[in-house]
Amino acid sequence: MMFSRALILGATGMIGCHAVHACLRRGLGVRALARPGSNTSILEGLDVEVARGDLGDLPSLGAAFAGCDLVVHAAAPYPRRHYGKAALLRAADAGMSHWLAAAKASDRLRRLVYVSSATTIGRPEPVAAPRPARESDTTPIDDSTPYFSLKAMLESRARAAAEAGLPLVIVNPTFCVDEYDDHRTTAQLLLPLARGMLPAYIPGLLNAVPTRDVGEGILLAAERGRSGERYILGGENTTSGEFLDRCARVSGAKPPRVALPVGPAEAISRATELLALLTGTRPLFPLTGVRMIKHGQHYDTTKAASELGYSPTALDEAIRRAYAWYRRRGFLPPSERS
Image (cartoon, rainbow, N blue to C red; front, top):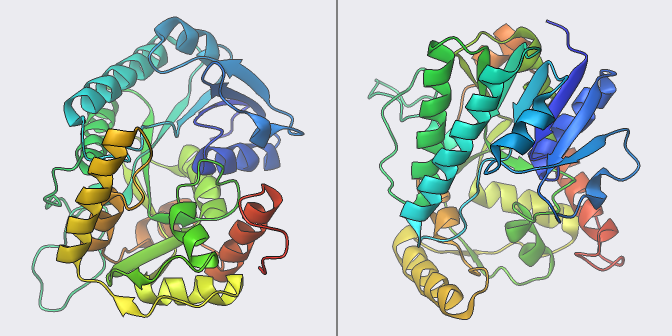
């Protein structure tokens, strides 16, 4: 399936920005939806039309959809706090309703791609030998924190919309690392490491993927994916400790050597979240991150490879691009190595 013009929601985020670049490499016209007043400097110099709007504003969504035959939703909320879950879920649900309503009203739309999360992939059923998780694994991860609940709810709505007839494909990225991380998601881990401010780590399983590959995978899913299906966009199966060792080698920092068990990590995290709530700041040690490592698992990307032609590239190169980006954007001093 070929397209002429794409609308990218969440284009100023790391995944959305890589989707923009993947579209441009294919010669597609690109419209990026950005909230009024949001910083769009990450898109400067690109042949991209910036439209102002919001998932909470249905008329602005309808206008953004006009003339686009591909729409990528990479703008789902990323809850950073453990508090206020009910309000977060209500707002996210309303935003999804608006997105689906705009899609149904569009007269040119040929494909929707919803960017979900690997955290919605269930645990493999008990087998003789452990194996990486697949798209067909539906035993849910038991976690009531806002991030896990929100991602599960939104993907469920996307799947229901596909079953009702919308030409919608779901992609499930794993832990992303790369350039264009202006919202500093992965940077919450990589920057303290480079600054020598990460004394400990939480041991766990991890699948890390270059976000450039995720952007390419989104377009492959649009072109070749089957409506109603989901595709894991993953990279290398590793561990949190090994990943941090590799980041340390790239940044020139010393890797953390103290392994912090999940129990104490959760206690520390809850304290920092309470402090953040009282002071109106970001939590220094978000519970969401702790829970992601707690529930971490390895993933099987065979389905994306066989159906989409998805092929992830070298993780170390993505780590290098990430640290180079942090320096260019002033998050690290120019003297930092990468």
